[in-house]
Figure (cartoon, rainbow, N blue to C red):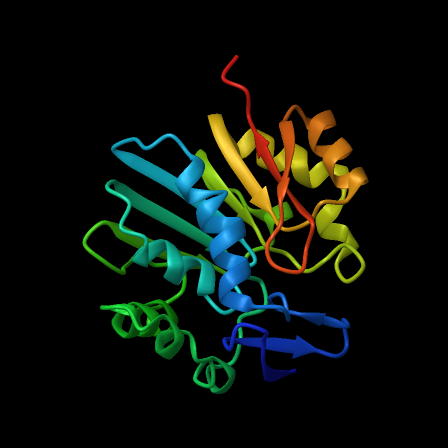
Length: 219
């Protein structure tokens, strides 16, 4: 794998073995901002405290953007990543420079140098725990209000798009919770609905027509 520049000037990582990138080659930051922040974080009902689960922590971009968002509540962020990236790759990424935001450098360093399986304080209102677990094996007791589903595409990791995955996540979420993913495949949408989610198609990020947002009904 190696670092490449995406369409908005921010880096992503190409994985030739999977014929995949970690983010959209049309724009890594733009994709994450649209799918996970605008359609996810900014679309949930704000409470005093939100529990967030990310499936596919990868470069940490989604967590970084979440920490910089400025949402006015406490955030508990659980990130699952069975295959952590090497520090030599992480040090090449230009998200801090591209975002040019106060605290971005400190937050980025904290999330990647902090120990695994231990809560790390990233900001005054957000803490993160990284777990080297697969979603199929995750046994945490938390119930989540928001899920960022950022696994590699179905052709690269088909096992992460099977019907049982959505049932696991449905059971792991609070009523009224929201799940967002860049993927808009019809079979994925139908499998989410079969698990109990209400699913809507939304406009996708640059270069992609649609994405999916799933909600766990309140009743």
